[in-house]
Image (cartoon, rainbow, N blue to C red; front, side):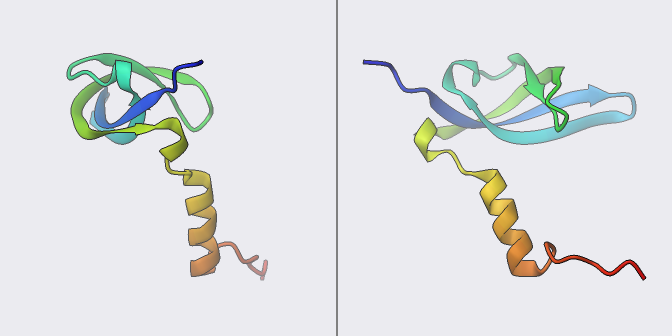
Length: 89
């Protein structure tokens, strides 16, 4: 029987030339350690190194419980009208 992957919500920070950027995401439980430096995928599906775990949430969830962000964004766009085509006038 395979072991299911568990996740924790973490806040991570990465230094950039003019300060830093912060993100919050669910990451596999084994990587959710304060001070750990991680590589995360960006919007272009490229790995970006240097993300430092600053906060680790208490709750541990199973992979099947992870939020479906694509579905949430799609539903938001439908409910706000952001998904409707715009005229090119």
